[in-house]
Length: 163
Ligand code: NI
Image 1: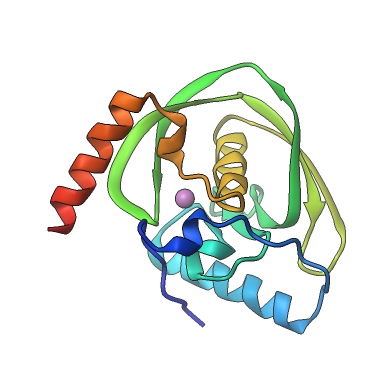
Image 2: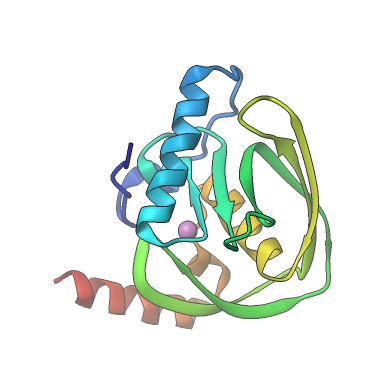
């Protein structure tokens, strides 16, 4: 089922999401909905808070071959290495992008929707996507990671666009 993507301004995007405790049918249906909603919107990642669900879950898919695709439940990020600046955007903040500096490589650990452990050492675009989506679980938007001046400019453009 395609769910409505919440936009910046919706309080759910600023809340800290709760850890998942039950790997049940409800969780699997949430993950299926996140995937469907992400594909429909043409995104490469989507976190549960973006559809109004305050749980620590996200899905991602960076290619058509399904190599860099999956779901993460209760993810933790460790072992950041290097630095990289790339353009980032967000389905909850459409049409606006900015260069964001993040670690180039990270280790991400968690579970999939069946409760099986997941451990990824990711770099490049995948590392960026996994960090961006994990940020959503802590109420952090990508523009919280740019300079105050750039953030002000982005928010100004956002308000103008919404008028
Ligand atoms: Ni996002």
